[in-house]
Structure formats: structure tokens, C-alpha cells
Image (cartoon, rainbow, N blue to C red; front, side, top):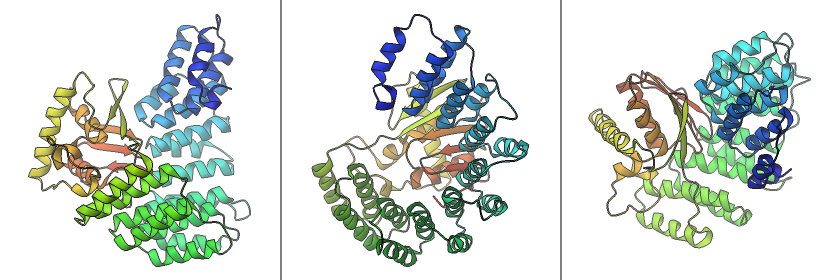
Length: 430
């Protein structure tokens, strides 16, 4: 109960007072940590369970698989899966595993489990479609969608396939699917708006919003999807229009308005509108304070999950890590990379440069940390809480090519597979 209401410390205290634990008490606690997005604590409790020789039941297995899905790092997933009892015939476990492997960027594992299920249900189909969508495999998601009988397709399956089209730039296919859906929902319309916006078709996206609002209340996520795409296209007039409308329609949505103001600030910065950048930042601080979500990235090295915040210097190997960042930065510049200041939304401090601020982004720290290990890795995997910025995306493509190292980054929206060819699986649809 306390975990469900975010009272983690109370739950921890009550758990510590139990003299003899069972699989039930451990299961409740592990699931509670999973609900509260603390997957590493789930895994720590699992280690404690093993020391006490407590049996792992199906409920705990599902919670651990869910925790692995949140972490999204293959090696961690593999380690846990080897230790929990799995049943070929358990549809719930198999569907959870498909989701886990999809979120960790291992499509082959997800596909293998899906194909082993003799009669997959709709939830299993949508889980596999989601896996394809996250990994930029739009055609595969459409093929799976077409295998579901029209009479049993539901809202979730429609959303999954439209998201897959959006992430892969398949606008014609998305339009055909959308036009065949008899009964749309706010989520389905939003997915189509996102798809149109990502392809720069803002007139059509706006028309869809206008048509929707003729018989429904305005929806915040629709506006956010359009604004995010407008940022990518540096469409300043549309961005200002969307931002002002969001402020008017959703004045109490603090976190979303903060994100929207940052998006608009990115656009101003990319166009050299320094005064506008300053004004919108001052307005944001005045209205919302300085509360901005800090970028956090996780990676796995030698069996341990390591966490980095943006500009983090707390790790014992920070000096080595930042020295490696300098080496990486020099290599990037030698290969033509120019740091893009438009992704910086605050004034530089006296000792800072554009390069030092952008190199301090959490995924770049995680990449550098991996490269100071011995032997130097040929594969790196990172999960982060925010969407990857344009500068980090371009830099990571180049790092993968220069260092001949496959890099997978799961951000807030999707999974990026950076190949040694210098290309990303998202084809820059992010």
C-alpha cells in the first residue's frame, strides 16, 4: 500500500521490521520498487533473496523482468533471465520477456520468443509491434499488424503500428492505416499527428488537431508532438503559436510547459535569437522556478550498473573519464564535427565553453566511461531518461564510426542503434 502512494521510506522501514521474510514479502517490496521506477533496488533485493534461499515465484519473476525492462541493458537482462524460472507455456512471462528484450534493443531475442508462442494473443502481438517500433523497424511492425484479423485489432494495436510508422518515417503507410480505422481515439489521432509532424507536414497535422477539437477538448500531447517536430525543422512561427496556445489552454501543466519553453528556446538558439532565448528563460524561471529535469544515463561495466548525471564528477574515475572526453572531442573535431550551441538552453558560466557544456551531457559521460575500461569495448549500451539532443546524436554516430564500436542508446522516445558505418537505425527520425 505505501509503495503505491510513493511512501517508499515507510515501506522500507516496515519491511526491515519483518523477522522472517517470505517470497510474498519480497515480492511486494520488489514490485513496489518497480512501480516507483527504482529497478536497481529491485535487483538488489533479488540478490538478498538468493542469500536467504527464498523461492522465486511467477509474480517475482514478472517484477524482475519489468525492472530489467526499465534498465534496458542487455547484459543485465541476460543475467537475470538466467536466474529465474521460465515456462515456455506461460503467456504472461513470455509477453513480458518480449517487452524486455525489445526495450533492451535485442530484437532477435524478442522475435525468437514471439515465434515460439503457438497462439499469440493480441497483447503479445502488440508487445512485439512495440518492440519493432522502438527499434525503428516500421515495416516489420506493419507486417505483424496486418497478420492480426481486422475484427480483433484494438486501440492499442492501432497506436503501436502508427508509432512504428512515425519512428521510421513511413507516412504513406501511416495514412493508409489511419484512414481505415473506424473508431479513432485521442491516442490514435495523436499518433497520426506525431507522424505527420515528424515528416514536416504541419498543415495536415494542424488540420487534424482542428478537426479533433471540433468535438473534443484540446489535448496537450498533440501540441507537444507538433512543437517537438517544429523544433527539429526550426519552424519558429509555428513553435511560438503552439507554445502560446499551450500556455492558454493548459496553464496548470507545469512540467509540460517547462519542456515546451525549452523546445522553443532551442529553436531561438539555433537561429541566433539570443535576446529571445534570454527572455523565455527569464519567463520560465519567473513562472516555474529553476526546476528542470536533470539528464541521467545508465550503463553497465563489469556487471555493475553505473549512473551518471549531466556534468557528473562524483565517480572515482572522473578524472580519467573527462580526459577521455577530451580525446573523443579532439577526434570528433578532426572528423568535422562542430558543436551545436542551439542545444544549450542556459547562459554559459565563466569557465564554460559550448564544447564543455555539450560534452558534459550524461550519455557522452557514459560513452567516455566505457572507453576507459580495458579492454576497450566494441559494444556499448546506455539508457537515459531524456530524449537525446541533436548534438549528442550526431556525435555518437561519428564516435561509433571512428572507434568502430556499436553503441545503443535508449532515450525517452526510442532506441538508437549507432552502427560502425556511422549511421543510426532511426534514420534521423527522432
